Amino acid sequence: MLLGAIVASALAMAGGLAHAASASGALKRLSFGESVRGTELRAVRLGDPDAPRKALVIGSIHGDETEGHEIVRRLKRSHRDTPGVQLWVVTSVDPDGVEAGTRKNARGVDLNRNFSYRWRGGVSPSSGYYPGPHPFSEPESRAVRRLARRLQPRVTIWYHQPWGQVLAPCHGRARKQRRYARIAHLPLERCRGQRLRGTATSWQNHRLPGTAFVVELPGGELSSSAARRHARAATKVARSGAGRRRQASSLMPMATRAKLRRPAIRRDPIPYGHERRRQMAAYSARHYGRRKWRLDHPRAIVLHFTGGPSYRSTWQTFAANAPNMGELPGVCAHFVIEKRGRIHRLVRPGIRCRHTIGLNHRSIGIEMVQETGRGSHWADRQILRRDRQINAALHLAGWLKQRFGIPMRDIIGHAMANGSPYFKDLQGWRNDHTDWLRRDVRAFRHRLERLLRR
Image (cartoon, rainbow, N blue to C red; front, top):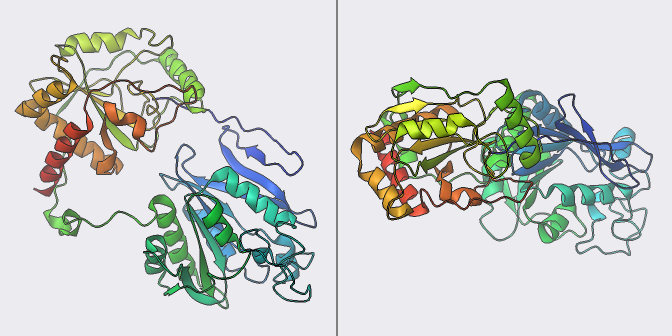
């Protein structure tokens, strides 16, 4: 439950990465080097600035293969608010070649042969594929190396022309490439280009985590409809890679799936005025790097139990706003469910509430009244066996899941929080709570799946 104020500063140091910030302080642009002729190389961040997942899209590396620029423009125009991923886009890493209309950079080097993995010299400078005098001899390839090392993208997409194919390795399932090809309406081609020396994708795939692959656009001008398909494909793969395997439940006709109504919720707000919001924003700055008290895009639901016997004592604890672990604001939760099944909303889901270390900036907290008793597993089981309370919890979690588009895997227990992909804490804090253990959350999810199939 920590927020983050990203303070972006201009770092323009020789060969370094320089950041440019928007008026709100959120990092939007990153200057990662210059071309031979001094043109700035710039990456622009789209999507969710707090997302742990990062992806990179490069419009071109050859100056005479520029239709990927239209896809980058489409991403900037129509996909700038893509949730769940920091989507970094670069129009071209060879602006000098683009200006001249040539494959190579201003020193006559094919940048896509200048990377160090399996680089080989002995090629004439007159060749169209001249790899340079040594690996990373060119400022553009060195800049790409810095950028990729800095971002560590889970997925990188490089656009080329004119083969009209999505390139995949000779072996392996290539699920990301297959998904892209299916959405973009291009054929998948195995092995093509895989044995070329000194390429950007081979260097990334062998030196960094994540998957880098080439999309060869067809020759000629890319139509508007094709650009839309490619932008959609890039966004889908950037967000979730190969996507989730289709389950039997996902194959059911939509008409047979339940659209849950909002359950009965009593509003019983705790004091959360200007001062507490200011405290939450400051807490977020310390722990998440961005000064913010709003919860704009909740991506997880965290289940808790109170450790106490009554709703009223829980409300009073959260309303007191007493320091916790030496910091303000005090702890709270968005919803509390009584043993008899009555749901209370203490804080709007659009406000950050301090309920789970490392996830307050990305999650909604649901507390269930229950004493610890003989331990966390015992307490979890009491809730799972208490019909009115667990049914209320299932309907609330299911309604929130549908409202905010939260995957089932991101409905978690407090005990699972440290392993969430959204976990972040700049102070090094970690959760030590054991409420809602993984095995009990599995039982909760199983029951929720059944509810959604009705």
